[in-house]
Image 1 (cartoon, rainbow, N blue to C red):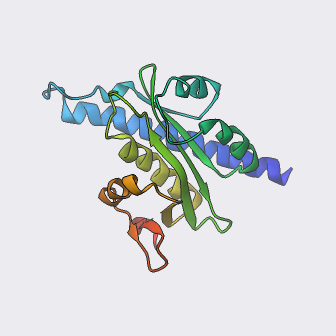
Image 2: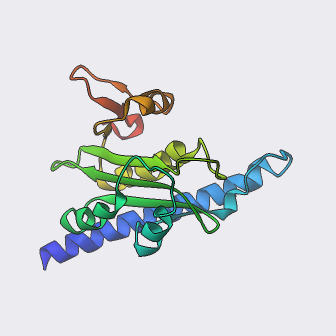
Image 3: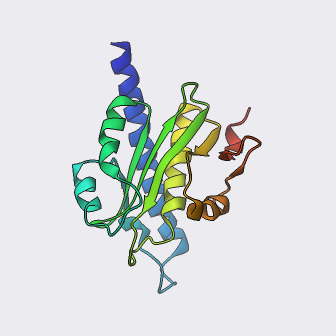
Length: 181
């Protein structure tokens, strides 16, 4: 019974993080207005769990960096993990999987990928959008450090633009300042 309660608690945290950020992004659209002709309709962005529908959409990606089907098994083994499918209308634009360490002080971004090849409405925004959800989830579970697990070399500059840097042990990390006691 305690394991089931733990799973349900983290399921609620995941759901709330995705939902709250989705609402915040939709409200942001009203603040920035629609004066920019190139602006994306932020109300069309959805943050969902990685499920069978997301994996079917992933199958249409051209030359992805990762094999995302194994995330389903990871989710089953890691009840505290966070999985995010980032959608724009009916197009899957990005996927992310993150998992806290045992102390829940550090949340590792295991995989993060935007849809490769061609263009999509959220091109060059997937890292930022995923990070917003990841940071909210980290707040819920009390993590104070985000770590990118085995970052691809081409992605390191993108993570650095998002506030990550290498620590003394060579890990690509970001400290969540507002959570540090």
